Length: 514
Image (cartoon, rainbow, N blue to C red; front, side, top):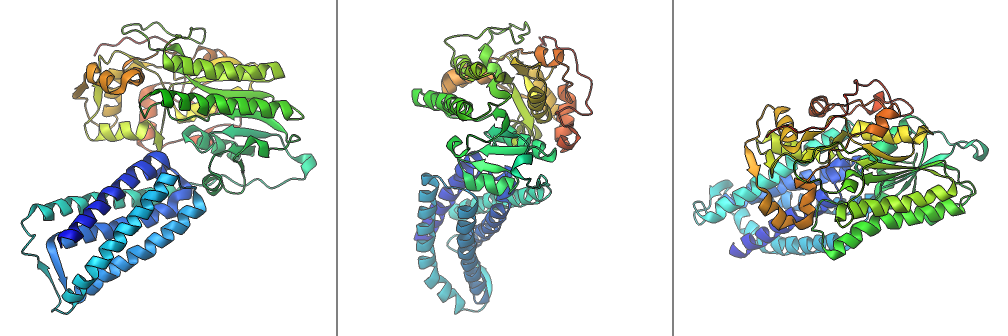
């Protein structure tokens, strides 16, 4: 049994890595409605593994119980085959994930080959679940109990995601029209991302034609359905296509892997490269788009020195030499080239976008719920944020309003310090913030990327308020309460992104004490 336990341990480690890295961080399956069937298969398979881990760690399955265990192992094979087919239908797996799946299959095959004669021997004995004397009190049994509890918890988590995704209502399909009646489309890059998918859903609910640019055609088509035209290359869009607006949201996540030289090049290319492609498309279209909304970030203003709480409006300068500022400035500079083509360009500088399902909120909420919310560094750094409803609303507002151009800070009027932000997050779950993470180890581990956590920008939405945009969530307390109760609110947005809203709080600097 030692070899069997070793193979199962390898299977557990590889499976946990596959779930965390590929399914959670890369593909973000629990946030994708198109992944509902795949998640259901994962939940069933993980439940089987939980039973196998705990069952083999503590018992010998004799008689008819051996047949039951063999049936579970055979069911796992059938689920895995169905999972392979579902993955191939809905998304393009990266090479490393395919390699890991191959290794998992080989490891499981070796395990089945070794456990088969053991099950045969057990099946010849009287039926009973017998505590194995060689492992009942050993560390192996407890280790496999931990494996089992972990994988069963993951099974429940995926099952809950399946249930939640089952309540997501797809956007209504738009009836195809004759070519001479087709309305101009909205081209969205980064359409399968957190903000992009919410924007596409909002546009579709109001009957807008959408063209989505995605690197993974299968994932995007499975997620959006037949009502959205999905392309994986801008070259696939004919020159006669009528595009009214371009919303450029594509780009690799800034907070994640360390900002090595290679990572910085990737972050820059994922944004500027697509922008250059969009400019090429605009030049060859028979009629250029009316407007382009390009995503940037409040990182444009750089890392404000500690204690600097003067409000930063859209006239604030960049900070050359700081990577987050240089990245935003490069993206905005490239986007402004579209102005030479007669395109109105809006450079949307986002704060942290809070919404259920993805982005920063789920992890922050989990930490707060568990009492693990923490003050980072001094806690006095500003923490600009915006609710997902208002992120989508501002984009649509900028698309429709011809008097909105240039830089727009996409942040809520109320900006708190990080310490007060963490306290509000904890309070929304009836908790208090009791932890403190000093700045020195964070800076040592994350390098310059630590500025995203330890240095803030007290950005204020002066341009949005001056143009008449009304924030649905102007204060953090209301936003967190809505998120806590699952109120996402998109259906209340009007055709131009503005609907019944809460009064906007005045834009003001914030310098609260810890």
